[in-house]
Length: 358
Image (cartoon, rainbow, N blue to C red; front, side):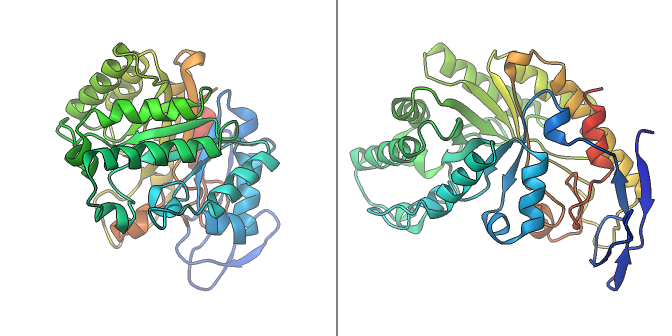
């Protein structure tokens, strides 16, 4: 990787000087490497859509975050504000304030919106978890929620993760509250309710594990293939791909290429590449680790870029910078999974993404 300039900085809890203009900042725990690539951005240089899952609080209140999103991406996903617990404070009320803000931001800045997610076993409001209705009541809850949300954003949200993570790691159906109340047939009906509400929206099944479990991967492929065979209105398959720097290229290629074989559009929907999968509390970011991460981003992008163009829905990273990544807080460890560091600066991973389409 020789098409960029590295500037090595010293990370500490005191002042940090590390840019072409000798800009002074205070920033603990950042990656010690800034990559200066020159003109151009991800959205300008990639031949397919590139997106990020957005934190609504940062989008509203942090100008550095907002400006970076505007500059680099042409697609956005709702990280949390379109999940059921955010939209449904009670059985009789909806709160669309934050979701509307995201959609309006995207429209004002010429960005595609991918909705996430209409149905999941997590992020349910308490009133749903405690709901004691009949089977018919549960069906009406599912139908009304999907049709109301999709209908509100008809013509504004291009695509939806209709059902998220319906399968366990062993490939069996997850014993979620939806399966308990409605059986596995709820999946088919969820897609139909979404199609009824917006005939033009692209509808996806989204899940994790494609790249590390052949069993899970086969189960996902069987699920979406069966849905297609039954005439269920499914348009795409989402590969979350929360992966790690030492995942094998063979596994990553198998994940992408088996998804392509379904004939559906393929969305790498929640990409991040962890550098500390072993939860080493004393690990620090190094240039060598950054190079390994860049190589893995490059391989994923290169493999995706090689699939038929009509199946390339795009690549979305899950969050924008290392500072807002879910991984450090979720696993209580230091980590640097994203292409941008805590100071909103490009890392070696950024160049890896660009190298993937050369």
